[in-house]
Image (cartoon, rainbow, N blue to C red; front, side, top):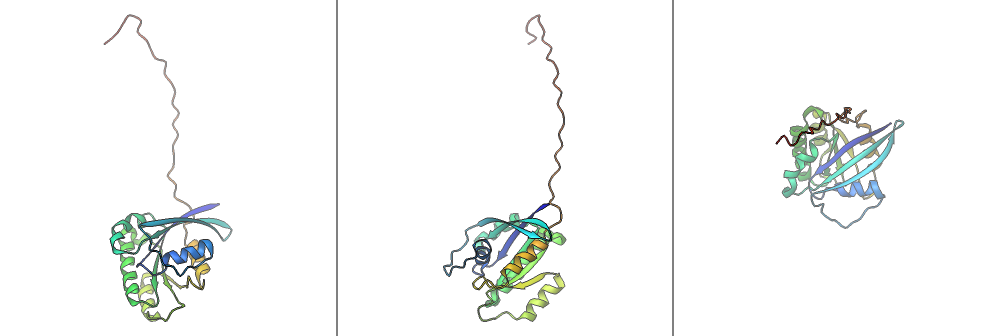
Length: 191
C-alpha cells in the first residue's frame, strides 16, 4: 500500500533547507549557496514498516518577501519541517514564528518537526532552549548536518513515520447516463 505525504520545509533563509533536501535526493552537498526563489518541489518514495510512503516535499524560500506565499503551501500539508541553524540564535527565534504560522493554518492537525541544522558548526542555540520550546508543543526534534550527512537519514525516516495511514483522496461518484431518444417534430419548425 502506498501513502502520499505532503511535507513542507520552512525556516529562515540560509538555514540549510535546500541542502538537507539535496543530501536526501542526491547524497551530495555543495558549499555554493543558492537562494530558493519561491518554492521547489521534490518527490521521494521511502519504505517504512512495510509500506511505501511517497514524500511530496515542498522546499520553501525563507526570505521575508516570500512569506505571504507560505500559507497556501502549509494549508494542506501532512508534516511541517521547521529548520533553524544551531549556530544562529535569530534563526531559532524565527523558527518559533514559523511554528505559529503553521498553527494558524493547520491548528491541531499539524505534525511538526523542529530541525536544528548545521551541527558541524559552533553551537549558539542552547539545547535547553530548544526543549523548552518543543516539549510543550509536542514537537519532534532532531539535529542534522547537511554538510556531513549526520542525522539526515533519521530525519527523513521520522518524517515518513509521521505520514498519515491513509491518503485522503476525494471519493469519485460515477452516475450512469442513459440517452433519451430525441423526438423530432415533422410538422415544421417550433420556433
